[in-house]
Image 1 (cartoon, helix red, strand yellow):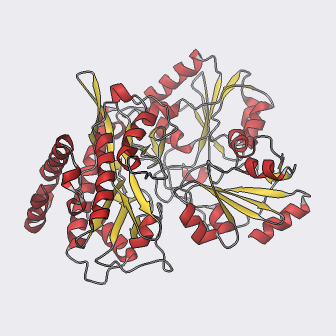
Image 2 (cartoon, helix red, strand yellow):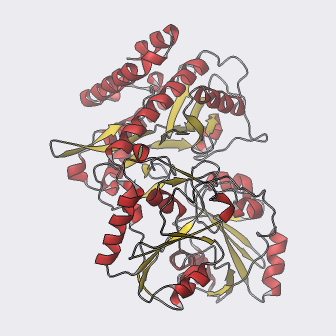
Image 3 (tube, rainbow, N blue to C red):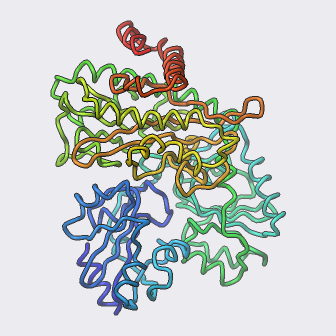
Amino acid sequence: MINQIKKLIISNNIDGYVVPKNDEYFTEYSIRNNLEDVAKFTGSAGFALILKDKNYLFVDGRYTIQAQKQSGKNFKICEIPFVWPKDIFKKNKVNLNIGFDPKLFTYSTLSKYFNNSCSLIPVNNEIFKNIKLKKNISQFYILDKRITGQSSDIKIKNLIQFIKKEKIKHIFISASENVCWLLNLRGKDLPNSPVANCKIILSDNGKIYFFTDLDKIKRIKNKLKNNIVFVDENKIFETLNKLAPGNFSIDHQTCSIFYQELINVKFKIKRFEDPIYKLKSIKNYTEIKNMEDAHIEDGVALTKFIYWIKNNIKSNLTELSIEKKLENFRKKNKNYIYPSFTTIAGSGPNGAIIHYRSNKNTNRKILEKDLLLVDSGGQYKWGTTDVTRTICFSKPNSKIKELYTRVLKGHIAVALSNINKEKTGHNIDNLARKSLRSIGLDFKHGTGHGVGFFLNVHEGPQSISKNNFVKLQEGMIVSNEPGYYLENKFGIRIENLVYIKKTNSKLRFKNLTLAPLETDLIDNKMLTKSEKDYLLNYHLEVYAKISPYLNIREKKWLVDLI
């Protein structure tokens, strides 16, 4: 694949070519991963820059170790946000012509990467299109209002009111997850998320143009609103020509340069943020209740798994075999559909790779002396889960107990934080790192990400991270997952999903995740009374909600943890 891109560079008389991970729908987890094809890198984020004489792979701190192992032979690994292409070009004082596929990039992305440090040349690239993927014609389906808590009619009405207030005639919703939320629609186009690949244009008169693979909507055509016009996904230009004049709204994160330029031909683009991101981030009562139910079901599976693995560690278990075992525990629930992302099961040194994925080449036997980091989740009817537990099988040394306890103190600091006071994920992120930073340590990822309702496991605009200043509001769901990683030794992470609940005008986090923590790794002398009280109350809640589904031996084990 690298050689094909080098030929593309020569044939177009350019100096380099930039390759993103994403496909034309800009989803995090898609069937197509361009970076895996080009660089053998399987992470969920990053991009490659291929020059005539050198190749660069840009990834964030979650993936530096993984990228070095998978791609370091042919690529120089650069960690963002510390190094961008613009930094390399500025240092070398050269003005290069860099090619890109306009359907795979947005203007904001290219600006962040290059910032006028080179000349960017749109290049029609057929290389990735020539890679044959099995055609997916799985049908889209509609969720009932009893599941979503709000009808699509109400959602559309609210969105129309918003765009009219902003003096916008048409809005192009290019993020499939936002279309799915707006129309209470789901599909099977992604491996780990019930998203239907589609885009729409909504006009202020309520008319909707729905762009997708028309083979996938045969079963739902009659169930959707009468004022929806179904159009082949490649016929957006023809549709734009039919629309009445007026201002347009697009989204700078997911509207490609290709489509932005098509809209620019006839319309003035007034707004560059899709308001649906914020609307869908605030879950209603029904969505929260369904998420709570899904987490009880998921908690049962994970609790049974933890009990099982602690009692079977001497049975020649491997990372891949326990992934399958955990999946089997989840499959026992009739509401379980599939994983919400590929399970991370990193034992010993593999646990230090933040988003590690085991395969036949890296698969390790799990040893009693190992720490095991298991980050997994499920899509259920109806909810999305994501949980991490770090597990030990023998008496840990005092240093590992100290590190785990410091991560736990950060986890509890988030759980007990006063949201009225802290207000944003940026401020709460500082609380999560305080104990580790007191001894000069930290972790290279955000403390938490937003989570969708039976949608993507990663969802914005809210998160608990250094650069997120979005105001946290009642109904938002985020993960709480501080960690610590020592390269080639071990990884520690503790993750629960939480939602924001208002009680007597106070905003607090309420746990969704219900699964025991690894008490054998805790140094209780390091915990304050409030931290000990939190642990006790959390495990009491886990027992109260999970124990009815456990056998006698599992119940006794869970009681002994309290």
